[in-house]
Amino acid sequence: MCRFLGWIALGAVLFAGSVNSAAAVEVRVDCSQRLGVIRALHGVNNGPVNSGQMIDLSSYYRALEIPLARLHDSEWPNPDVVDIHAIFPDLRFDPKMAENYHFSRTDDYIKAIVDTGTAVVYRLGESIEWTSKKYNVAPPSDYEKWTQVCLGIIRHYNDGWADGYHHKIRYWEIWNEPENRPNMWTGTDEDYYRLYGTAAKAIKAEFPDLMVGGPSAGAQGELIDGRIEPYPFLKGFLEYCRDNATPLDFFSWHTYTNDPYLYVRKAKAMRRLLDEYGFAKAELHLNEWNYLPDNDWTPLSLSGQGLNRRDWFARIGGTEGAAFLACVLVYLQESPVDVANYYAGDTNWFGLFGRFGEPRKNFYAVKAFRMLLDTPIGVKVSGNRPGESAVCAGINRDETELTVLVSNFRCSEKEYRFGIDHFVKQGKVAWEILRVDSGYNLERVRSDAADGMGFELNEVIEAPCVVVLRVRSANN
Image (tube, rainbow, N blue to C red):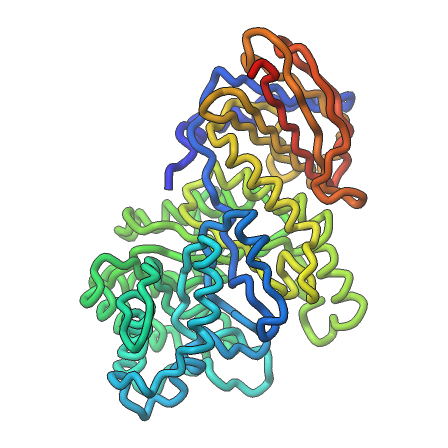
């Protein structure tokens, strides 16, 4: 993917234009100063067909042009697809025999994803288990056999083996959050290192062009003065891969927080850590992220069930979560993150859709970001306040259209003054304002025409809120 060229170097300029006065936040767009291509980092977790095919979100996935869907907790809480146990339920059988695999449900699940034009990140492993008794998250009884099952799955979906497909799935991730115990792993650190090493080496030996990675770490370490002090699990994992020449084509990690700018600070520290361990070429995948209201996981515990949990998830999917989401997608443009996957894109409690398949407010935030990609050349803009609000602007290649995305997550100022410079040399422009807030789902609230030279307008954007300003040359 093409990183937003120059954004890191120009980061200080990008964020320098905020106005201290409470009167207004100045959003000044200079179309003559290009910052490179806006990156499509709006990947998700999971696919569009849910609830036993009673819900099909494919039209929404197509509209958003989701770049990547990571497969984890698919059809949770009763996953019958993707997971190793769902495809190959008994390791006592021979992984070389096609009849020992149960591919059909996962075939349908993945086909629905690729039919929307979305690529896949396949997580080899198991979904999270919140149950007191653990069923599938123990270390495999036979690491070599488990690895042979993984190779059979890859052959099926990429090489057509066992009446399979040629989906060209590039990314293969080994397990999920093995440090999250016992919900995701009941073994030791060393058990996971050995599983990863066994599988990663075998996959790269047979499929050298594929990208293999992990460990999808949910707890990475302490962020101190721009550096990650890794927890023992992560430190041991990086040492193991380095010392045993184990492939690590991408490093995956997760963070849930109420600080949208934390992802940038963590990503830069994570990149530095990987480089120091000799993995400068490893891609950086933030493949689970979402809004964590009040930085508090309590509502997800048994003690938090009921109205408290309902309201907590309503905040994640509502205007708060929408404004947070849009801020993160803007901030990530200046980060070293190569791939990002929001958790989740389906009807999961954390998802973009409700249980009946209805889009939530956070869906419309992704849709607002998607509008930027129609005008993909990033240009200089002021008005960002890291952690509070975000602004991004882009023009199309013909220089006839401009999109400005503003997300006010928690900035106290609500008056925004837009100014557009060097968009058109002469003539009129047509503009419109769309909003995502308690009353609007990315709907037009104002539109008009104006002189293209020195174009300015004011808009009230009171947190939490997402606003899209679209401007088009009226000369064509």
